[in-house]
Length: 309
Image (cartoon, rainbow, N blue to C red; front, side):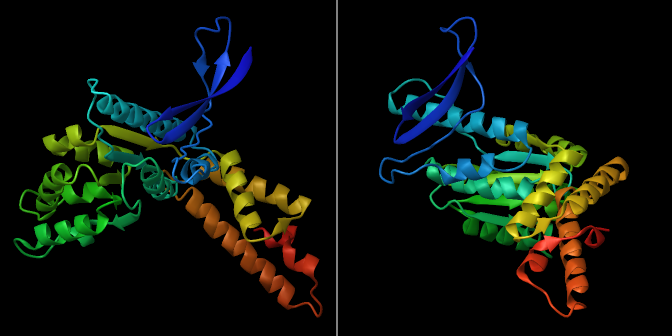
């Protein structure tokens, strides 16, 4: 078995992938992609792909995004060469519990699609039902169009999108859906819309409107983090805040997270819970230090076992 990194160009972007050769060198298997989308005009690596692959866990999410990006680039190149190509549709449905990384990945996707030339700005606009649905006839369409206008060149991320279809036939949420569907066609070359929410609710939502299924062909499932992944996320958060855990603190934190994962409710917060836990531990460390007459640099950096609870 051997590995080879193989760079190739699509338009003005360089992609580098890892190929694993098994028994037949003529049939390499693509493994973990080492992706560098490098516009010739800028001569630099893709920061978005680097940021995406630095996230803990989400292996299947990363793989799907890599596939979508590669497919879209190839279709664009085929069109440039007057070869029959598939339409590039990047609208997506993100399904998963809170704290599983949906918003974080959406923000990175905006940067990525800008680097690859699919979006002009690459920003993320996060909205929910209240930002789209009005209080009287005609108000909803106006509000929805305004959010779409603000999103042009980037990603419109609609959190808990299923709530748009939960108000009954006369609810203005359906007007928001109709306005959204129409504008997907009008701005298909410079807008990506991501609908996000719980798995079951999003599946029912997509089924509720025939126009949504064909316009949102990419479904991305965000699984709950494992205990080990949550522990790594916690350590990463402490490192970003410039804290170091003592050995006993690390052991206690791991035990706490394993216990949490065994008993967590279905819709509990995953990484959000870990963020709150880290902030609570940091506050507890501060309470411990404030009672001491002298506090040095090492004490300021170190989280002790007693701080983890």
